Image (cartoon, rainbow, N blue to C red):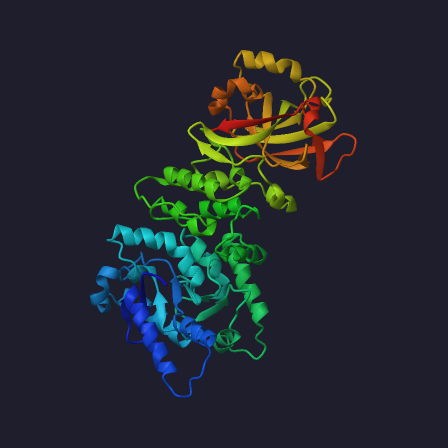
Amino acid sequence: MPIRVLAFDETGSQMVLLERNKILERILRQVFVQTSSNVFRETPAQLKELVNTTAQYAILSHTWIRDDGCDVVFQDWKDRELNRRGYTKIAMFCRVAATKHKVTFGWMDTVCINKDSSSELDESIRSMYRWYRNSHVCVAYLSETQDLENMHLDSWFTRGWTLQELLAPCRTYFYNKNWAIFGTATLRYVDESILRDAIQSSNFDVKAWTALIWKQIEQATTITSLEYQLFENLRDPNARPGADGLFSRIMQLASRRTVTREEDKVYSIMGLLNVEISIAYGEGSKRALLRLLRECLAMIPNVLDIFNHAFSKPPQLLTSDINDYLNRSETITAQAEIRKWKSKEPLIYTHLGVRISLLLFPAVVKGERHQYTPQGGVSGSALVETTHGSTSYNLLDRFIYPKINSFIGLGRISETHVVFGVINFNTDNNNIVIYQHSLAIPLSLTVWNERMGLLYSRAIIPVIRPVICTLQRSDIPGLQTFLIPKNELETHGIRLITAHLS
């Protein structure tokens, strides 16, 4: 249960704010009333179910009042009726929770969090996702929307915190500005009676109506109903978003949202990523994001999707700008193979940077006045997009190898001769498993010489989109995956290294 909740009767009236210890007392009192009858002969399992049912609560998802007046906050509770608009929101939420969803507890961030207490604010922010996930129902109040066809225009779909409020609850019902129900985003656990009573029609079809709701949600957020089902899997407390390509998608969705305090763009997605960092308003969004990404490296296994982003200036392997995820690669995350991505060694953040295993593929710009001839039996290409335009590269071109050492010796950083550090590869005994479409870090030639490791800090080349290398065996083109024995990598012009990249 949350730290504090609203309690009310079966009509939503007689509202009181209860602290956590008082919540338990009220639950036990209600259970006692129901079990004190002589006819009560329930089993321990049924008694547990009764306690859980009694403890159910509704949770409100909304946008704060900004245009005229303000919301009632914790400190205003005693004088709440003086704020007519703010009080009306509280009263209507409690009424809907009680009469439509049959609960007598409710939670909303305005009055249920004492933001004057830094410890309470910290706990609330870090627990928010869990509170929404564990709620019996989420009431999503769209205060700017009257009709269904305009639902996608509501600012509720643009705010930072409402992203997790859309994805975390098991049951979400949308209400318009007049507290009339629109429908549900929920694809499971739908209470059809709530919708049938609200949307009176002899031909009412719940699935068809929900499809209309999802058309609006997708238009507003780009999240599809199929994607929503993937996010449902994250409600498992043990779930991690690294295996389904959801990590970079969460970051992309968050980057499009607006927040009042810049750090909230990061804090609001902790629950979706199933990690926690301490709250430190004033640190700035860049520092908050770096702390979050470092924690993700430590807590989420095989989260190579964390590097599925652009490298803006100054380029960093762990970006400090969440907007770098705007142009994440869907080519990579759409592959079933992403579930199999496993780093050769643990990804570790150190004072030297991220310790990461890379397969190095030297490359040269296409059309360098010579015919493309692979060094060995593997060929490839890549498109690099920068602020100056797009450039196509041939990988493992025999032409480049005699030049590498001279370029490195001069400390030269060349845009025509680069190295792509592929990160999504697997090891299978003494073989390396290579994917046809591979996510790569664009690097200067300095990384080819492991003795020049001190230069790695300036090795990443700025790009506006992730680099995807298309790789194939020359003898059997078109394979989605293929094997190369480790002892034959150099024959094909490929090098396996462990680098520290900052």
